[in-house]
Image (cartoon, rainbow, N blue to C red; front, side, top):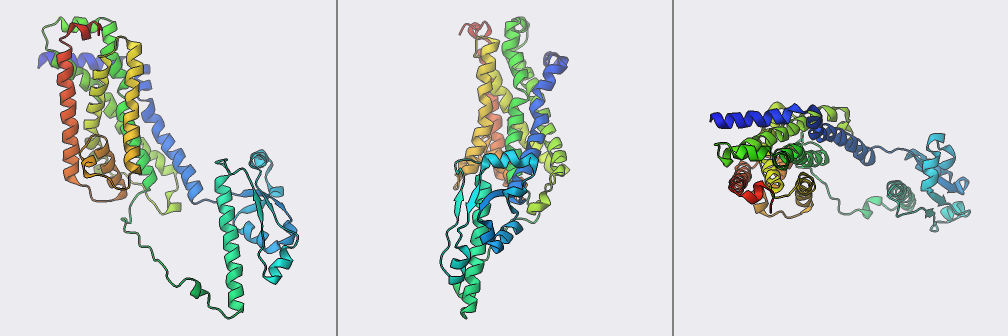
Length: 387
């Protein structure tokens, strides 16, 4: 026990000695909440807010009521564009041509063709075009309903069946897109925060001949691996805690009431998420240590271990895109935790069997990696980077 304590203190001293390297390791944990806040504001603006859209109208004088309807939907004439936005809307170049016989055809009840011109492959053009289509469709339907009423036709006959949607989500369910982002960022924090520490304590110490000196001491390789694992996992766990705390603060600057959502992270929920992600922190550090010891140099370890970062981003994304999720996904590491995090933020009851199952499997895989690495450190090929 004294040997293990000495090894652990050595790992912590190495980890916290270089403050700049520590800040770089935790950099993602500081920037992730800012990214969540920024993306949330952009999504809310696209989903709810209707910023002005400036369109180059040709023949606007022929359809004053249509122009008034479009203005009510914040679809304005290009001549009114502010100077600071003129270049942007000039580049988007959205134009609508209103025919000169618009009033005549409207009076005679003939179909009217409006020509919308834009670069439909431009992503920035799609939301304004979608709003224009919706506004003109609404205007067209209102004209059609008025014509039917003048002819004594009840417009309710056009909708004989009406579907009434009832949302069964909890009243305090949070914004699902924010919860998905936060779940992925929590996984990334577990993998990214302890990454540099794991590489330095493995491939880095091997190049500095520190590892060889440790193995010459009368101490088991299992204790050495456990000390390195706890040292790297501690930084990973600190990264997870920082993402949780800073996200709860940064989301407070986002007006979620516009979409009827709330975001609250109470102490019990935060503690549950920390305990849920704690095995992931150990798994991430164990994988990074295992892979780093298989490389021949510190530089190779940086490039090789860095590929592991894609795992916590890829798996939750694939799981979120699946319509029918197999039950065995609840038992696997990362996928199981991501599904549980999604349930927590949606306000759905947590499946405690899945919690214990995915945590148990995660711990079992971590233990297997630790034992395998402890065995490999007894090999001269691994210690001297000969293989």
